[in-house]
Amino acid sequence: MTAARPRGFLTLADIAASDWPAVWDRCAQLEDDRKSGKLATTLAGKTIALVFEKASTRTRVSFEVAAYELGGNSVLITSEGSQIARGEPAEDTARVLSSYCHAIVIRTFGQERVATFAKAASVPVVNGLSDQHHPCQVATDLYTVRQHFGRIDGLRYAWIGDGNNMAQSWLEAAGMFGLDLVLACPEGFAPDPQLVKAARTAQQQLGKGSIELTTDPAAAAAGAHVMSTDVWASMGQESEAARRRIAFKDFRIDGALVDRGDGKAIVLHCLPAHRGEEITGDVLDGPRSLAWVQAANRLHIAKAVLERVFQ
Ligand code: CP
Ligand code: NVA
Image (cartoon, rainbow, N blue to C red; front, side, top):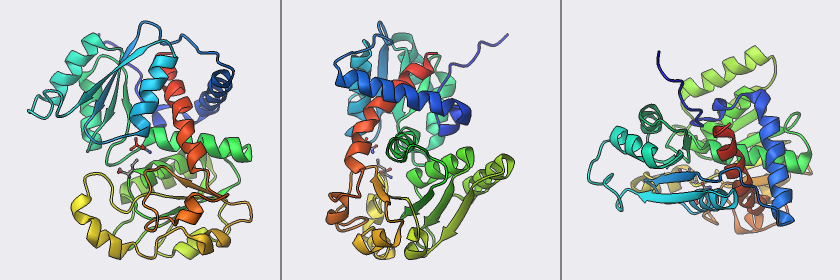
């Protein structure tokens, strides 16, 4: 008999749509408790390995603080500071880390490397961003929307920019929750068609939601309640930055685009941002932006996800 796989969080769907309200409720509880100085001990005796093969501010620090504030501990493992950069196989790293640590958060390149870690590990693995998905961030974004509007349903979501890891996790969310999502991406920068198809199939099964793809940011923004964007060149695409600056020049969230949205539209950005590229400084730092709340919320999601993978 093979041992049951530990519960992991590689993409949003690793937590069932029906379970997400409880996760977000727990986030709200954790957020309130923190404000009143009450910290949980749900991770007492546990150490979280943070394997970061790419840079990070929010993900790394939120998981470090989350582990500490839940009574646990964390260890940062970077490629250069470990045997990873010298070529130790992912399977061997995952296996050894599993013998010291109780969960692994990994930020890496291909999603297949996240899956390889999860397969070889005997502890839960959490995806802290891959080239294909950023589930911790979109879980946070939905929490932020729910906090602000009191619901995630009945809203029009617009993604403006690259069909990247963030866009693809939004697609997955649209499929799981039946959201109305429109993505405006330049020609040649749309999300993976397989993921679009999977999200549409999920919506058909649910009987609600819509997914539209366009190359017209103004059309996507029309009537939107939630507008999201992200950098034009993601980590690992630095050599494409100049080419992308040209391709994406009309895919910027500025005041005029926000004005096309619903009168109460909010703007999200996972950060880091490039003011003057994908978003103007006045929007990012203005009253419609929830980017700073969104960033702060990463901590509560990190805690709720860590608790969840140990349940
Ligand atoms: N939004 C986000 O994941 O930020 P970091 O790259 O700083 O972790
Ligand atoms: N799409 C960006 C997100 C950073 C949080 C990247 O992958 O670099």
